[in-house]
Length: 97
Ligand code: SF4
Image 1 (cartoon, rainbow, N blue to C red):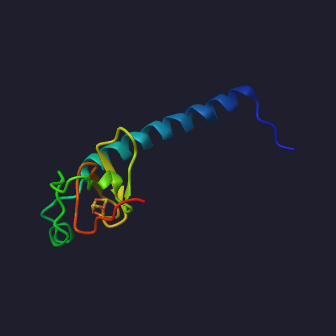
Image 2 (tube, protein in one colour; image 1 turned 90 degrees about the vertical axis):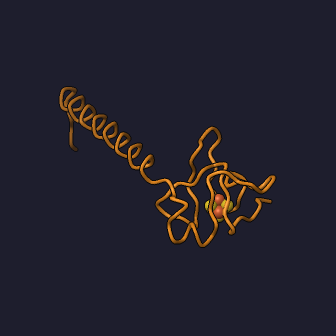
């Protein structure tokens, strides 16, 4: 059976905490840089806009969007690796049931 003394456990835990903190920071930076650009080819083809002009139709209530309460930018199945505006819209919009 393997035993870890208290000092070794604390060293291991501290390094894990630092790694998770740095990982969280990099994810935040990545998210800020990865908003869908309405001028991108796919976005343009789907007429994506950051602010919907269609009453009651927004990315936050679309079946393709992954709405998170309180978040202005959310993931969307149509734009993998990018974030769409929660208040946005595109031609692939389908209202959640
Ligand atoms: S499919 Fe279009 S309307 Fe639906 S969440 Fe994605 S970008 Fe928004």
